[in-house]
Each structure stands twice: as C-alpha cells, then as structure tokens.
Image (cartoon, rainbow, N blue to C red):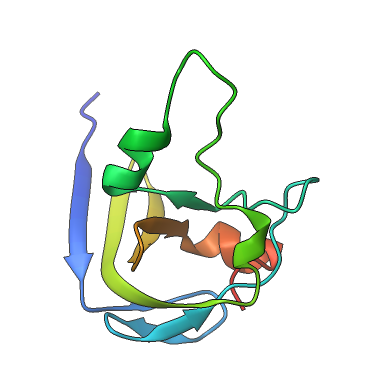
Length: 110
C-alpha cells in the first residue's frame, strides 16, 4: 500500500461554514472549548511554541482563555491531505495556529 501526503499552501480556503477565508483576513476567536476555558484547537506555534514547550512538564501549547473575543490576521493557510483526510490550518499573527474545521465545530472560531 502506498501512502501519500500532500501539503498545500493556499491564499484562500472555503470552510464547512461556507465562509471563504483569505490570507490577510481578520478572524475573531470564540470561547475556548477546554474545561478550563483554554483553546483546544488554537495553539501556540513557531518560536513561541519552542520556547514554551517542555516535554517534562505539564505546560500546554493550548492558547489561553484570555484570547476569547480577540481578532487575529491569517498569515498563512496550510492544507494537509493524508490518507483521504484533509486537515486545514490557519497560521495567525502572534504565532498561533488554528485547526479550522475543529475550531468551527467547537465554537472556537466565530
């Protein structure tokens, strides 16, 4: 069996909520969906994640709940296709990454 992975960077993405998002658009975060109010589908990325992550501690890369209601600019859109599945991620300003479809379903992306 041959497994293939395709990674595509795009300037736009049409989500399940029928909104077409573009690089440069501003999005608004809803409420975090974790029990403590932090975000499950918005996480720190890039240098911020490397600085914060310690695999020997309980430090989470989940975005904190105080980001609820804030607006962020989409810097990059990435779509990974693997084994028939598609995972779409928005890379946001201030080094955050948002898993699009899960964030929509959970209310983390308005």
